[in-house]
Length: 373
Image 1 (tube, one colour):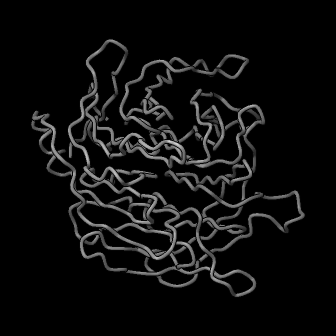
Image 2 (cartoon, one colour; image 1 turned 90 degrees about the horizontal axis):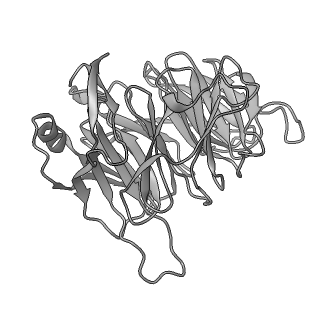
Image 3 (spheres, one colour; image 1 turned 60 degrees about the vertical axis):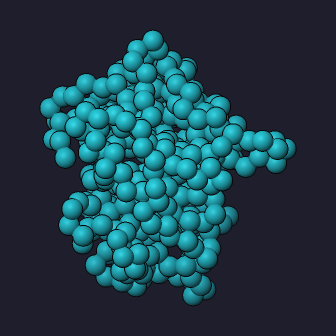
């Protein structure tokens, strides 16, 4: 893959983004989508408790060679589960070596499974038990930046597993001393995000925390009530490893904090999200643009350089530039790690609409410029 990085250059009136690949499974409701770290595969979770893996190496290679013709996305592997799929994460150092082609998945009432993408076999299982010796289901999962550990969030615990050692966690910490205690991190852990230096988590009670590598809580804060919603459902570090961004369900905002000063948010982006469904967001490789999906099917590009984080009031950016990518809610969105390609996935349940818009997974080429990393 290219060693250069890219910067999105989409603005209203500029060269439009172009769909270069699309899935043909219209009856599927997509929940989340993520590019593999080497940029050759896409993983998409759906409401039928399945994880679909798409091999997009052909489309990426064609794009890199200058060919932008549209082609269908065919499911490479489909992993069906007996319980609800709660989360998944790619191995961060995945490359051409088959030994690195794996991901970890969390299914309700099951241990964590490290699964091979090529053979579909489970390589290892990781189990955590509470004080009643009951198996806990991980509601959030993420690899450490070096790929040596797996962090898992539970209803009342945070655990760390050694990738090379099956079985119980190396570290397991309570998020709060007791249910009645006001200390610690309250609520079910819904998100975990890691980078090269920090581990962050968030809960469905609207609280966030930074953790030490051994899962101990370093500090806790919460989403301000004016931006709150009803619980954090998506958490992501900006590429600068300083700002952590969070989106909540039933909230109109995506909020960012500078971890050097957590007394108040440093930036806010407005994104209509009056839904209980998780809605992802992503960054381009430069970290300058925040890309979010909307409930009306639009994908909007926010230029974070336009936010003045030094002013006294928290800067709020409204919808600047967008494109109609789908006919329904954009639940999944992910940026390619090496090329200006954007994956989006749509879908939500409709109980009163007899003819809802078809759902699909699409890959877009976005106008961009390259620079040396």
